[in-house]
Length: 81
View (cartoon, rainbow, N blue to C red):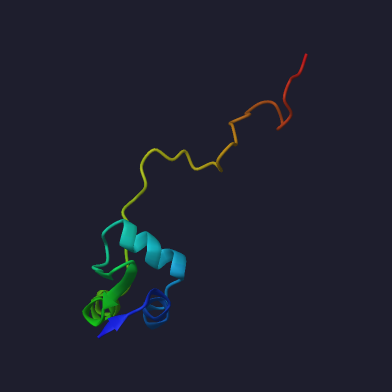
């Protein structure tokens, strides 16, 4: 049995975007039929028995949102003199 991505997400209690991240990170085995992506039922069992999915830590992140700079000492206000 093969699951479509929304079916797999619902069966595992994950969001669709999380499933796409798992697929792109090769954490979930997929079968491609033409352009269609299907996930074997064994992967649902593996995820559930494993107790969910643990993503590896992301390296190179500073913890701030993209585009934010550390403005310590300025009170969040830039000096524009």
